[in-house]
Image 1 (cartoon, rainbow, N blue to C red):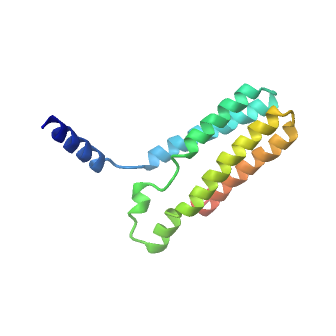
Image 2: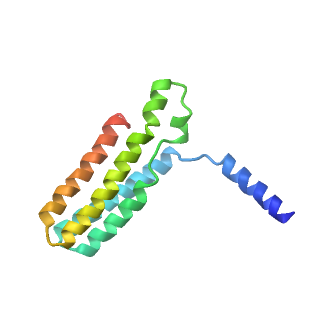
Length: 136
């Protein structure tokens, strides 16, 4: 009986939650910006540990990014398609995650120039999303 009651409470709590909100997205974007700054500091100060910490934080933060529940429930068909372009979002997330690994690998192998070039690829992916999906 207790299990059923707990299960009902959990279902109701999850069902009534707001989902992913604009405030959540802003917080995730701030985490990503801080992670990018950490990675940049690691590159400029020649510190692999700082770079790895920033890369880890970026990979954790990028997972959460997506459309907000408000955007998902829009009545405008084009806006809904644009905001819910999950294929593009997932592609950008994969690209950033892969590139982050390449940056750490190249920097660890003693090639900071190539690592910095890969870092610029991440910034291009960020701008691609902001221009296309976030309507900058």
